[in-house]
Image (cartoon, rainbow, N blue to C red; front, side, top):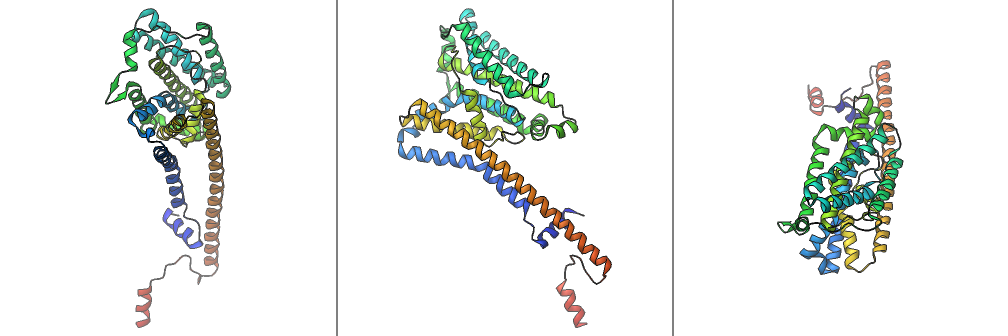
Length: 379
């Protein structure tokens, strides 16, 4: 039976128009967070004119840069059905070691290369523990987080690494088209990872692995390879976050980015990526990052204490996770109802055909041609 015939039967028996409903749900899903962001910006701009000033907008984008970079990497990890809790401590460790190299050698290039190498090694370590030892990513990256934090504190005795050369300090004030270099680095990372996720076979493999690991394996996808690569991507974004931290604060800080991994998870989930994996995008994560950054900035210019800002971010994470759970539950219910409707349609069609076989006078889904009927009567 053709698809057009099935659609005709669904319309005749009153089955729901599933395609239109799915398209409407997808539209609402994609536009909800941007709409909330626009409303929040309008509200904050109307209540505090300082919010829409050029200086404050630049400040929002700069403050969001580190969170955005790691959130883009976290997007791949979560879509693949994994978690990476090591991002905050690992990026702090990378900033410490990078600062040490720069101070001792006087070369910013060498420091950046060391940061990138360390990020790759951390991603490789996390991926190997998850894929080869089959340790759950939550436990594996939690262990990496503890180890990275301990090493950073041991290397610095709890202090900060200062004394970066003047040449490296100029990066913190470097601007293009009025925006800091950090913002442009973030834009470049976004464009690259968005292209990787939307335009390459690997991007679709990540979605497949996160949606159904066994089905992906049976279709010929190397689940271990995909998992390893998403952790390597995460490692690179961790390294870039460590470099961005160095540029921004001009020192290696072992206690920095303590809640970065949790904020990245919040941004990814708020943007609409499912915690269970198999659905999401880097573009959606960008909206989530901007929403959290604008919310934080709005609370800051309103004079809200830092601790209370963290409470709000935590509440947003809980709300987003709850919405994700309800959305998945509703999706399962709709899938069950659509399956039942399709089953009823098939059963009704089969019954009608059986009746037509037993009684030739019974017609099944035969359209009536009014013009032909009038001609036959006139004849």
